[in-house]
Amino acid sequence: LFKRGLGRWLLFAGGIGTGPHSGRNLMGWERPEAEVFAEEARRCGVDVACILLEPNSTNTGENVSLSHKLLREHGIATQRLILVQKPFMERRTYATFMKQWPETLVPKIAISSPSITWEKYPEG
Image 1 (tube, rainbow, N blue to C red):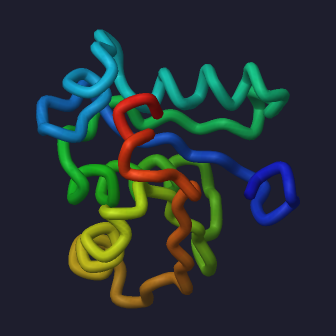
Image 2: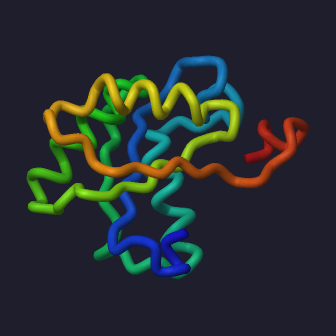
């Protein structure tokens, strides 16, 4: 989505998860999920200057609240956002975002996920 020009920034959120669908449990990651995904983005040619990291959240609600704080700290406007998640987490992501966004004015959001089969989830 970023490489198609649909945004100027990539914000990766996620600490070292402990849930059943976390990178730690599915992939054996020993560092924050945000760092793993940011590294992959850089490997794919994304300029490091376009990447923001939020490596401390431990659940979807914290993904929202701590990402909001990081965006504010960097002075990045939030009229429109694209949220990316696993396909089976899209509805939960939307509901959590709507509940946890700390401002009265909620940005226009779109939710996207990779086209991936259930069998491929553990592989990433």
